[in-house]
Image (cartoon, rainbow, N blue to C red):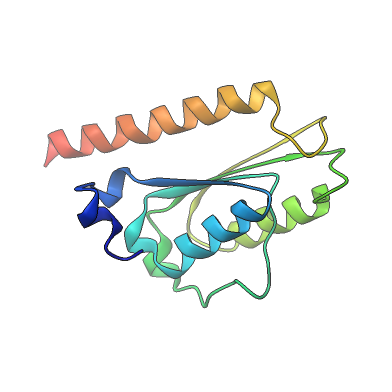
Length: 133
């Protein structure tokens, strides 16, 4: 994975991971273990697995943007697990956006709009920073 930006000829400051459910755990673990590879993560109906949680270096994750969304009626991954992700990330120097929706183990239509806006804002910020360099 560490060579992915080079193989894709991509700027890690513009690379974001997205994971749903267990994929959210995996995306979050990867971003926290190797924060130099990505600019942020969107975790949708995900959780924080204790077996995948790396030692986090706060200074290394300071640039990360995190979006966490969860359904309040999720019977597969409880909203309490989504809140655990939120609480964990609130203890780190990351930019966190958190939202809950009245849905089950799925993605709310409003959540897609928030995700699109969140990604657009991140990309716009990166483009502006590149122009300022």
